[in-house]
Length: 615
Ligand code: F6R
Image 1 (cartoon, rainbow, N blue to C red):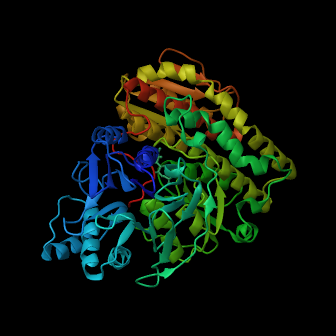
Image 2 (image 1 turned 120 degrees about the horizontal axis):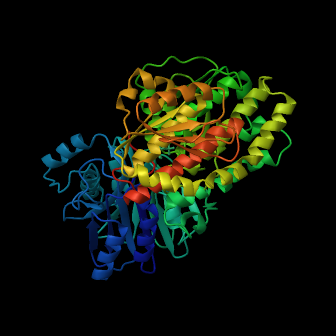
Image 3 (image 1 turned 90 degrees about the vertical axis):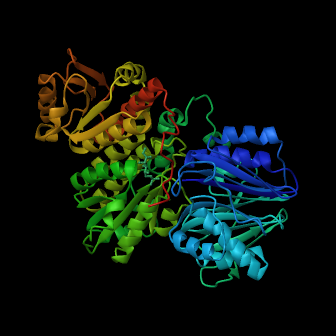
């Protein structure tokens, strides 16, 4: 949520800031703004997208050697120009601040500052940071110190970048609970919330740690850790060379990132599974050097995640219990820590997250640690994320940056890893014979090709999409391991096409939702040839008998014939354990094409943002 980019150089930094902002826009797009220092501070803000901001910049011909910029996803205060960042303190020794995260004690700080005469011009929590720093600066006369003293009073999660009007030769930044990194350049240094924002300028990246405060000028940088000392002690942080390629964050021949990411799934899954598919056997050390020791003591698995990642966890529960014979529970991260859960000894806690930054997931994992569930595994797409750094074991999905707000390739790569984890635990628990192990490796090897084949249903899905785009509601049905896939299909449709979609375990239909079925209610069913197909067919008959319009995703072996009001799209093979992964593909395509029909903003659906870093 929200994106920060800043730069200080010996040349004009405005193009770097704008390019960086446009790459960060997927994180939040309610409004955008920047401050450039050039004989005073020039600030431009807009409730439009970054392209609007670029137009304003061009119109006013703004240039400068230092600046900070921001793209916002509103938390405190509506999306409006006055709430857009950067925020200023009062006119005297003016401070500009951009901020990601939430300051939980902002009301208290605001009241104190108002008593001292500060006047606020926005409804944001961020503005208190600017005023607080300005107040400290009055006392200590040094921006770096003023930032250190101010953050000691802030509660909550934040990443900030700060500039001072009367001393424009430096940018001071700080992080606590929200990602922030420094880009090291030649005669220039940068700050951003995400590496992708800096690729046009540098690949040399320093990931700041919790409690770090840093100052940058065009010649260098200095980092101190304020974790244990109010004014910090100097620390060295490693410079990493980012491997992210520009291709991975450019659209290339595609119209939308979501489309690109759907079609990247064969290669995303192939990259994720490379270590397995090139091997002769499945080994636990793919999850970390301690994995064997931890897995051998694991008696129960607890999966914590949100949204699409939660759906991946639900699929995994079926696999883990039926194949590896290990009890598994799956919790929505935002619920887990508020329901007084019981901690079982021998539990392995798995956090699943594309971004590794989701505040609810991080908080739930933290809560599990407090319950002394100390063994944790992260399945995550972002190597330097908080989730990965906090977990004992890890498996990185190598899907490449996911920019479309609706998660696609992250989900299928998570499922690929969870299937591998299932096989690993099944082998260790003697539930997988050597022959079955080889079959599993062969299936995982085949997965990228199978996804490629599944993508070929696109022309048929497009025809269905025209019909769906006329509807206001849709039901999605599945049974067993395909029930969470129905949930994922409904989530995709609602978030990008704004059609109200609900998923039900098909057996639940007659317990209430059947009342909704009429000819205006399209009913989507996930119907591969598994042991529940017979039961599912009976549920579909219940819909058919009430005049419902059925849209069935079947596989090569499902004996379901088309008839009036019953439409079938058939995947070209029956995929056994891989089936939930493959049935996800047409559902993603359906949501995408309905959104196209409805002309919604596919990559930036209303009210949403990528990486939800607030609770
Ligand atoms: C839906 C979607 C969200 C995310 C959720 C968790 O398409 O993208 O539901 O899955 O916000 O995000 P991560 O996986 O980054 O923790």
